[in-house]
Length: 334
Image 1 (cartoon, rainbow, N blue to C red):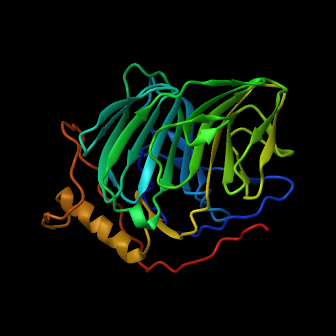
Image 2: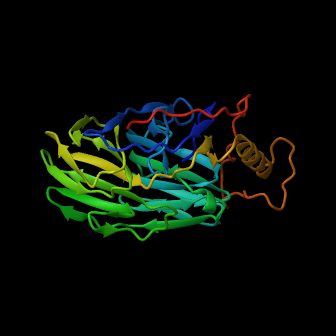
Image 3: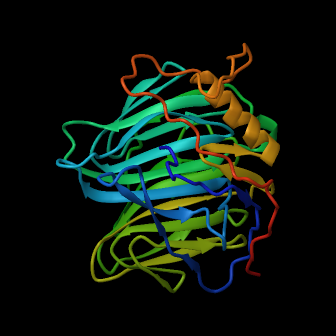
């Protein structure tokens, strides 16, 4: 998914892992429209000022359930990415994916689409005509510095749901509850959809060296005793070997993410992850050149090309901020 804000902020995102206290830190989403007046609105919980990263996870957009039978749905023309992996996970609906590395795939409920941008890739995403309700999440994970210019790649994986006491887990990255995903990650990390029956108490083992996030999709949940409402994201810092999840009076669906602290600061702007303002400027110039804008000539070493057989014109990059990024720090707990 593209960040299609008209004026995206350039964000300096430090890795500021905190040691876990008794409860969880709760992060509320902000609403971001994806395009025009009939387009979807997503709930974004990462990044934000109080916390930019959870492990390598750096971006969470949570959308739906949205009736797209009479609306635009998801219609995101070709757009670029660098320095990250995109993780697409649906609860309801279908999305068509196409990228410049030649991959064409469907995003279906309970199936992972993992795209590695590396040095540069472009892709498009469209909900299908058969989709009436669209509901899911799009996440990004930053690549560590030593591999962030790797070749682009794509993986598709369908996890087998694991039955737990009063709960079910579908593990799409890393290892959770003894179940592992085979997909490629460049840092140690986890990702899983977990559903809990009403009133269930689930004790989940955690890796003490990981930070963790719990995005509640539906129902109400207590994470380590802290109430977390639907659409909110709970954060737990490192140093915790277990967590108790307690569902309220209704069943709960949540997304668990986590990983080793990245221990690197990143710069995010639009769809690019880099390490400096100057890098972001160069990524933008390369994309504009690749799509024939701003009078630039496409050079042989340009990392960007376009997916084949696209109908819509690619998205041009927004205007850059008028000032050079001035690094700031984020508050941390502990």
